[in-house]
Image (cartoon, rainbow, N blue to C red; front, side):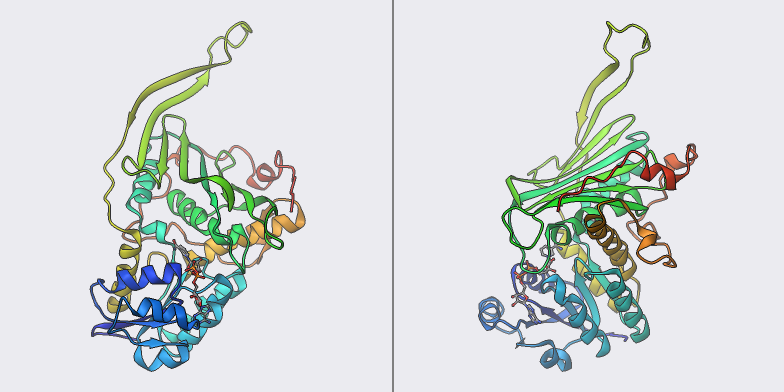
Amino acid sequence: MAVTDGLRIAVVGCGYWGSKHARVLHSTDGVDQVVLVDAYEVRLRNLARSYPNALCFASLEAALPHIDAVVVATPPTSHVPIALEAIAAGKHVLVEKPLAPTSAEARKLITAAAQAGVVLMTGHTFEYNPAVWKLRELVHSEVLGDVYYLDSARLNLGLYQNDVNVILDLAPHDVSIINYVLGEPPVAVQAWASRHAHPRFEDVAYLRLLYADPRLSANIHVSWLDPCKVRRVTAVGSAKMAVYDDLAADERIRVLDKGVSPSLNTDDLTQPPMSYRYGDITSPYVASDEPLGVQDAHFALCILTESTPNTDGVSGLAVVEVLEAAQLSLQLDRPVRLEELSPDRAPALVGGSGIFRSPARPWLRDHAPQEEPQNAWHRGHAATVTT
Ligand SMILES: NC(=O)c1ccc[n+]([C@@H]2O[C@H](COP(=O)([O-])OP(=O)(O)OC[C@H]3O[C@@H](n4cnc5c(N)ncnc54)[C@H](O)[C@@H]3O)[C@@H](O)[C@H]2O)c1
C-alpha cells in the first residue's frame, strides 16, 4: 500500500511504552499525524493532554479510516489480533516485541502482511541501539578473538505482567540482541525457570542457547524478582572481553584486555593450571541516539520507500522461535531444537543484509566444527528444569 505523502500513524495501546512511541513519532520525519488509540479511556485522556491536536479513539476499528499505519503497543497476547485487523485494512504495522506468542501466529502475520503488500516490522528496539551496533562490530571484527560465549542479564524488581511470564516479557530483548550480534539464531534452547511471587507465571528464568558451532553458546538470565537493576551483555572471547552496560551513564561499552590460557607446564601440580592476563580497559565512542526514535524513523522510512525493515516479520519470528523453544523446554524438561517446533520451517535469516548488518562471523572461516552439532548440544546439557 504505497504512501507518498505525510504519514498518519496510530499508536494502539497508550500505556508505558505506547506513550514513548507517541512522543518520538511526533518528531519523526515523514510523519504528519499521530493518532492515539486505547481501550482504557483514562489512559487515552491522560496522554491526549500532552497532544491536544491528536485524534483519539477507543478502538482500532474506529481509527482505521484516519490512518496509514499502526504501532501495536498493547500487551503481548493481543498483538496478533490487532495486527491482523490492521493488515486486513491495508495498514502498515509495527508490532512491539514479542511479535507473537507463538511461531505459528508469527508466521500468520508474515503471510498476511505479504499478501496485503504492507510493511510488517517488529519492535526489537535494541537492534536500533548504537551500543549494540558497537558490540556487534567488536564481535565481527575479531577484536575479541574467537567468541566463546555471550551472557545477558536483565534483572529488576518488576514490572510483573498480567498475561505472560518473564521469558516472554524480557527475554525478547536478549534474544534479539544475541541473534543480531552473532548474526545467526541458535539451533537449540534449554530453559530453567521458577515461580516465586507470581501465582501463575515464572518470574525468574535462565536460558541457554546452543549453536551449530558447538564451541559457541549464549546464556540469558531474566528476572522480575531481583533487588538490583541490571541490563548487561558480556561477550567473552579468546583475546578480549566486552561488556555492554545499558545503565551506564557513559562508557556503555568497555573492552577489557583480559583473558586466561592454560599454563605451559601442566605436569607440575604445584603451579596454577591457568595463566591470567590483565591489560588495558578501553571504551569506544557510542552515539547517544535514542533507539526508539531510530526505530520509529526506520519504520516511517520503510513505508515511504516501500522497503523491508531490518527487524521485519522474519526477524520477529526468529526471536519468537527461541522463546517458544524455551517454553517447550520448561514443559519437557530437556533442551529443545528449534526444528522440533516446525520440522519443515525455513531457516531464520537473522544475519541478512541491511544497513546495520556486517559480514557473517569471520572466526568460523578457520574453524570447522569438530563434532556433529546434533550430538554436541545434547551431551553435557542434562536437563534440570524447575517450573
Ligand atoms: N521495545 C521495548 O523496549 C519495550 C519496552 C516496554 C514494553 N514493550 C512492549 O510494549 C507493549 C506494551 O507494554 P506496556 O508496558 O506499555 O503495557 P501497558 O499495560 O503499560 O500498556 C498497554 C496499553 O494497551 C491498552 N490496550 C490493551 N488492549 C487494547 C486493545 N485491544 N485496544 C486498545 N488498547 C488496548 C491498555 O489499556 C494499556 O493502556 C508490550 O508488548 C511490551 O512487550 C516494549
